[in-house]
Image (cartoon, rainbow, N blue to C red; front, side):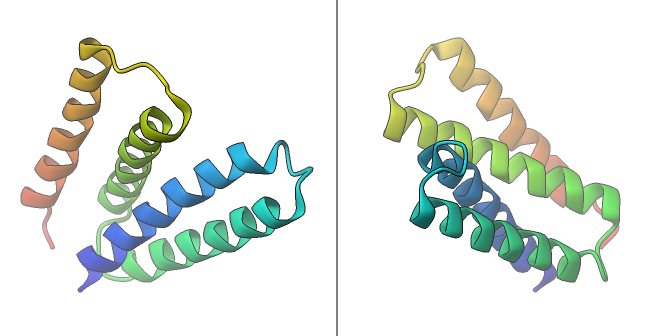
Length: 106
């Protein structure tokens, strides 16, 4: 269950990162509120997961999920680069997340 909570926390991390883009430096009210709420949810869920998961592993997985999600959404929503090399490095982050999950002590 803790891994699922951690995964959801990572999704919320992607959400707040994208929300920051839409908030335009916290100058737009609703995107700013969205960003702050999703940020709080993300950090809260991370804190729940690290009650039982190793903190270093959980933090690395959380940031990895957030990075992959944000990079993917950047491509979809903002037309960011789809270069093969960039996609390859995103894939390497995914491999790292999977490796941390497989070889975690919990």
